[in-house]
Length: 334
Image (cartoon, rainbow, N blue to C red; front, top):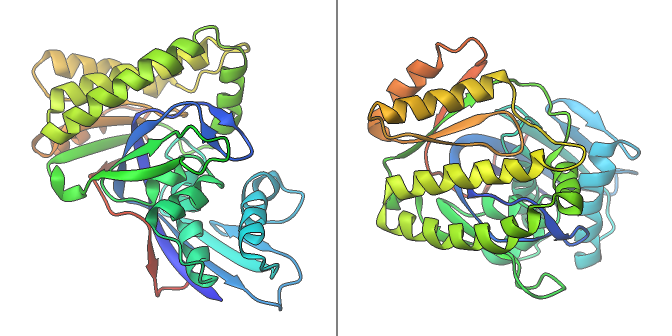
């Protein structure tokens, strides 16, 4: 009962921000994302009677019962797995990310997509991609999208039990091979307010949240799906950038305010808008964190990366493109 899996982070083009059911991880709205190529979580899980308790090791650091990272995330996820399968065997989980963790780069999405895929294999659960996306969702909402390759839509569903809340692939990576994201990492430190907490506060008291939920996101999903289908980069970029700004506006107008941006974030946002005024095709999007993802086409990616390198507040640059979904691997970490 041992298996390993690899999954990539995904970046939302139409954002997910807020839950309608915290226990089942059901979102207030749908969302659309791109699974990245190379922002990877590699996870090995082993269920064995030799383990008296679950063991969790992430990037070399061990977490146990009583630690927030275990209790609120992996512990709850494993409880769901045990409820579904009836298998109470304890396990060891080791997971490594090749990009900053808990810093606004969707590390939890990659991590839980990899964990769900490995658990499905180790326990012989036999889940298909859509069922697997629903299982991954129970660990991290956005993980539901990292199960699939390329461009993905997460359907919020209508059922109270979450049975119709799943991600489905819109297009494979090959549909738009020229599409690129240049990721500017403005800090590798953990963010002070995790997305889960930020979402909850926003839903609780942002005076503008209902407009975001009921009007902005449904409209943007329709627009961006059409833009992806037609490979209409300008419409996609304009929609994704505005959607991002409106999401952050809901967080900023929450009490107390939630501001994920730092000085580097703002500098790059202004630069992207200036470059666009100069004729370069580029737009930005930002998740619940300070990192800026610059949307562009392959022909401009290296030029943009070179320009971003000049910013003193940028610690790293990653160029990515539409990538593969979660998959089982024979390469075990332990």
